[in-house]
Length: 143
Image (cartoon, rainbow, N blue to C red; front, side, top):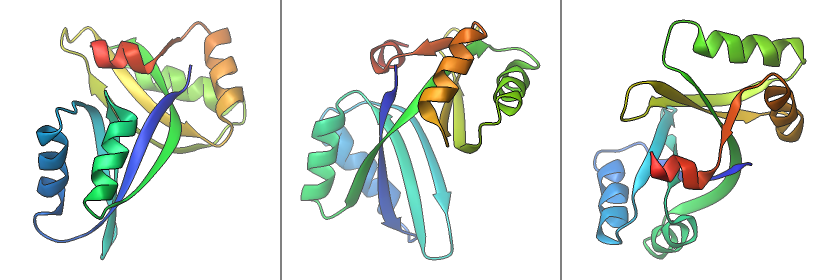
């Protein structure tokens, strides 16, 4: 149950992030999770949205460089140690985390951890074996 994520490469200058979010809003595309990583000149905006292909198309039409990758969404209770338990399991399996970001769902009971692992299928099997809940894109969009 991998989730599609889009990545947008953008110049690190005023207004670029606002431009992207406005384009998505004008096209009724809902952002469910996001992360921004930056360097001195460029940034990478990672997004999970409800309409992946439409988001890619409208951003490309507006001159942005857009890629698509798969990530894993793990739901844990929103309490102390939730992330630590997932990372301990992954560490013991010898799997590298390439990046991650997280959000808390509306109820505040659970947190969703978005991961990109070096070995995605192996990470998913390891986490499922340990009883963690893996969410689909539809489930994330329904939160």
